[in-house]
Length: 437
Picture 1 (cartoon, rainbow, N blue to C red):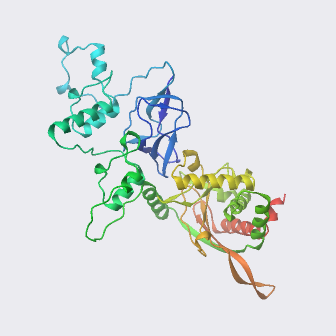
Picture 2: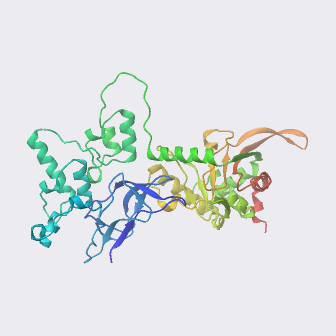
Picture 3: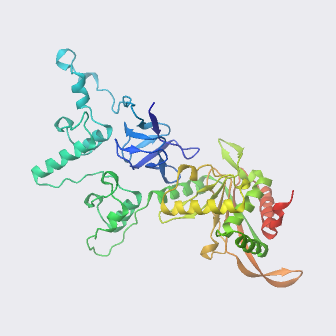
């Protein structure tokens, strides 16, 4: 039977998703696991893979549509399978506009099939104010290609260039066009179905304008980040704990691990391992606030705040407490690479139970981070730097780093947060504590 393509859920509280673009045309062959579409959720813009192999059919969602989670928006047909009747896109006409009954209104099945447009064709025609009765179908149904051919023919007759008003474009292309003052309708797209890509916008030379104050266009990822952090800061009762840790043993562990493994090992990899161990001892920090209750998460899934050109995203290392250092490092490299390329998948962003924001590579000494709901806490980490500390009453220079723990006071109180931070500091200062029973 046909495989349904549904609007997936990424977050616990997600009700809808917005379709950014189809990466495959209706009628095109697709393979299971191949990128099929881009959607915007309450967390980020992500690629969604095809759930099956076959022909994409019955596309009922257009670019920009806000679709309820779980709703079928297309099907994938296997060999010999027929597309089911698509759901009705428009409500029935009121009684005063109902079609008359009787022989005059009857049509043959062939005529009815020929006059029925595909959902994408119907939306495109509506965008351009076209009467579908004037569009000639080359096949059994009026397709998007038939509508585009009609638009071009009409433009040729009138001598006017038709500009599509809602032409699809990638999120990055929209941001670049907004920043450069370029109208997307004037850009020739080279992406799937004529979608405008970032390279297409960069190839256009904007008209010279007088210098004037202007606002920057926001990428979808940046807008989502802004909305989520605002919601968190205004609705979650934050409190913060700071602690300095000696990083001498941590640095020695990193050096030994790097000798052992050919792959690059970072301080973030070590800290993911240590944080996961500390969360296992203090499960209250690995909980969430949900419907007025504290829910303890059954897995320890550590999210990593990653800065990209489009904005901040938080991919997740699942079951970090059960992974070895080498596996954590490999997973971290894959997630960061996909994040920088804008190719994160739904699974990469879902299920996080605790977040780490490491700003040490930017020479930041300390920072207070905003919690990533519905998680109970986030750990911000500063750089490792030589500092003067007291050792047996005498000043000594030691490599240290600052830890800043942000907590949701609805889930965690100060004492529990302090106990977690102390356990983590002890592991940083003596990583052999991981071997303790």
